[in-house]
Length: 110
Image (cartoon, rainbow, N blue to C red; front, side, top):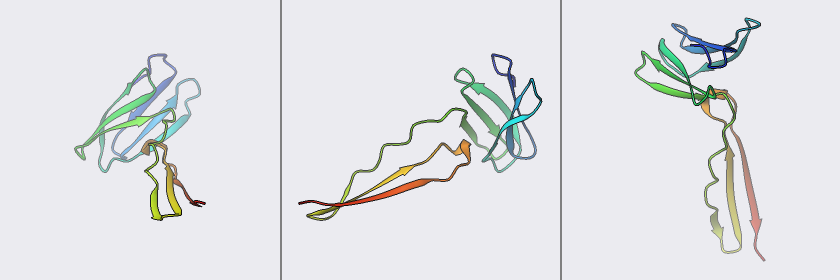
């Protein structure tokens, strides 16, 4: 599938991954993993800011080409009347194949 602006091409197939290609250079720009079987359909969505894919593993997945904001943090958990703990997790969408970054913040009240 070609992007609307004609600069990128996405391909997929038996290797269970999706490739985004730079048409001018012929080089791959990104590779997305996540399906467990062959991918038989891919298309650009949302003005070419994302991809949708259908696989023989009976799933349809959405992949983001631009960073998305993280989910809001969970509410603080009160451990003691004067001490609180909050776990903040920042996770890129699965399409980025990046690690999860987590921060545990503890503080004591006066």
